[in-house]
Image (cartoon, rainbow, N blue to C red):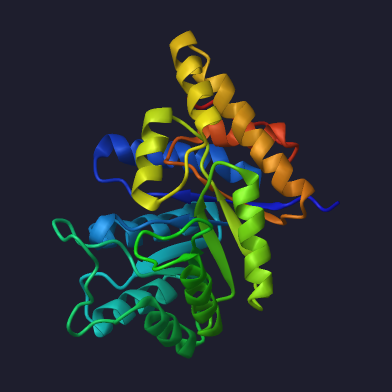
Length: 288
C-alpha cells in the first residue's frame, strides 16, 4: 500500500502575534514534505492582501508548493483575475477556487454586480488562462445552501467539469461520512481525486462551532467522549487518538491524500502525521 500524500492549510495573520504563529507553524510542518500547502481568505475576502503576502513568502522562503485561495466575494471580475495574475507573477501555480462566504454583516452570499456570478464561472476563467492547477471545495455532508445531498454532488461535478483537477472536502468526524460521499461521487461519474479535509481537534468547543457553521454532524458518542476528556484533562490525548484513527481508516480504504486544517497550530497535526508513520526521517524541532 502506497503511503498517502499529505498537505496543510494555513490562514494569513492579522496581528504580529499571529504572524509569529504562522511562521512557527510553517517551520514546524515544512520538514514533513507536504505535496502542497494552501492559504485561506478570511470571511468575505477580508484578508485578500494578507493572503497574497503569506503565499508569496511561504513559497519564497520555504520552497513549498503553495495553493492560494481565491473567491468570488466582493470583487469585480477584473479585480479577481488581477489577483490571479499577481499570483502567477509570484510563481504560484495552484489555486483553490471557492465561492466564498457572505461578506461580514450579510445573511447570504450575493455576487458583486460586476463579479463572477458563481464559482463555476471563476473556474472557467482561471482554466482559460492555462496558468494554474485548480482545486475546489466539496461537501461530504449537505452544504447549508444546498437543496439536497444530490445538489452538492451535481455542483461538485460542474466545478470539476469546468476545469478543476481535484476537490478538497470540508472536515467531518467519521470516516464513513467521507467514504459514502466518495462512493456517491463515483456513481455520478466523477473521476478526479476527492481529498478528505481533516480537522485535528485542537479544542472541542471550537470544533463544534465550526461544525455548526458548515453543517458537519457531531456524533453523540464523540461529543460525550470529549466532554469527559475535557473534564479529566485528557483532551489532547483523545484528539490525537481520534484523528489518527480517522486517518488510518481512510488510508486502509485506499485514500491517497490527506489535507489537514492546521488552524496555524502545528503540534497536533505533526503528531498525527508521525503516528501514521508518514513523517520523513528528519529531526523535527519541538513547537508548542
